[in-house]
Image (cartoon, rainbow, N blue to C red; front, side):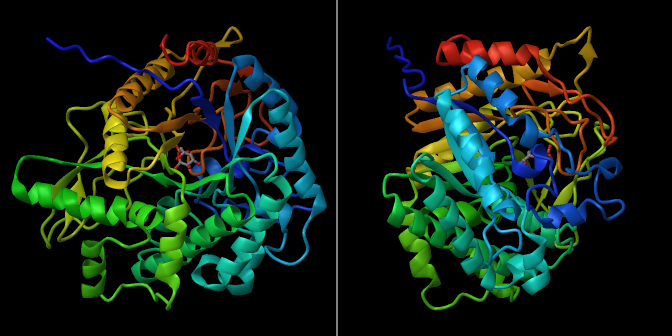
Length: 482
Ligand code: BGP
């Protein structure tokens, strides 16, 4: 009988946690910052849960020292955060805003003073509104140069101290919500043609930024973070297996193949051609994709759930919009693309109050797919549970969050034992923060923030939850004690 000798996490494993500028910073109009598309979008009636905004968010802008101190006390190895483009270039291009650069100097230095590795996301969705006004933002190829100019400004300023860069956060999510579902800026629906064009521009922005960084800092580690929801065939019917293949090509590999190989998946392109939806690809674009792909150091993935995939006939359901933004369990509608697939709820797995499937093994599965398909190191740049937390006698007992994270880390450990090279695991999120469409009631943090939907509610006091102390011990034992 042979027993597998388990390796566990590597010694230099980066135990981390993540946030995004718009969701934590607040200070939406301070120190020269101009509005982003989100500052406008949240003001459109009906777009966000109870009209919540990130005007104040959890005021990380003014509490960053306290927040980083709590990270240090927890023993956090890396903090993933994003930079607000509108603080650096308020108009998107043109004049640089020194005060904005200084804020992130301070944040980075604060992390480093405690030995916390800063992992910086260049773009987490808060496009300068000025670029939307100038030329419709991502819809126009001009965005690529402005994006690279912004990214290079960050690389030059912080590259001596920041060694881990995530160029784009969830390109698949911000483009789908922005051009298909009307639930993110610029709020367009069912504009498939533009959806693929915008994605082509975003791929170029990613690729050119990767190349620019490697020119300046060849040793920096770079990639983008993809929202990876692997698809399982609903049954053993061959048409469900084929539907799962279609789903995985169109919803997952379409992005990861470009980051890792510098090319679009063939079957997806054939499908888009048949519908006359292929983006305008200029001569040289695919070369740039390829060059960048050869320089990418990791696949960043934000993993929350898997999807069940069932064949969907041509006269079947056609609905891409399937969100539950209220926390009323069981209200998420089924989504599907007529003629290809639909995504029923997985009957074998539980779900969160927002109907997100809970599938720890899916994380191992995701790592295995990436390893066998791309043979790239992996950064788990987000994973976590959105839940209602209750403050009781000044404490938050969140055993459900501990159990969620524990089961995912157990599966991640198995992925490492399977031979996947995993560099970092960042939970979503460090403190509670604004959930784009779900307000402040959907909490993810290790650190509770005293505030609710109403902008004037709460003291913004920071209170470590039970999960904070649990993760501290996970880090101390390098994932051995879960
Ligand atoms: C990811 C985003 C994060 C975060 C998280 C949780 O898609 O990168 O910014 O919001 O999901 O999502 P939600 O806030 O919708 O629960």
